[in-house]
Picture: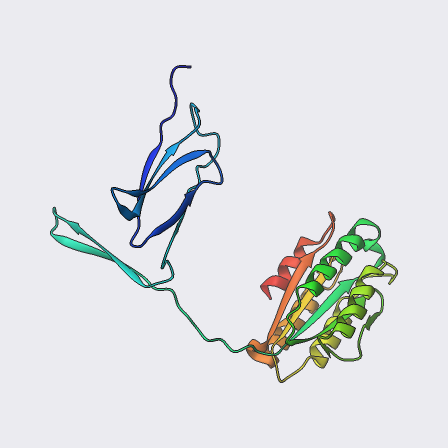
Length: 247
């Protein structure tokens, strides 16, 4: 074809432009236009007839984290429109927290699902903050915990938990979620926020009873208890996972 897409962009910032680039297309960039370091020009460096994907432009400029205001005057209405940008800076103190991982190791998790659950747990353990307590609870027709109570994060406790996650198997029989959840809620710390992560395929019969348990436990601990449900496998029970999330 004799027709190509032409793209020309002028970038004008309030401070010095350090770099202008596109991760999606080949471009030509001119900086310091007319001696102004706050302006750059971009043109498409490849011959194409249309955009097969989104054109992405990244402009890096000094002082983007500084408060700024833009004012635009409308001569028709003789009014001004103002846009104010503020970047908050908070000195947030680290808060000690408790993280408990509840892993479904019932027979329905055999093969692929338990492998995915193990990999997910390993990733969660690798992401643990240093200022936390944690525990791992496994369940099926019965349940047990890695530690008698949540332990402070340390090289020793982390290594033990990681090894435990790597060796997991789906050998706990049926799927009984209520009892391990109840035990976790009753034994969670009252002096710090608790986050519970439930990894399951969710093949249970007593969803309403589980939801009521979660609601009553959250009310007792007020805003210091959160529960996240993660569905594992192709046959996951969306009813349970979504009900737990909404609770």
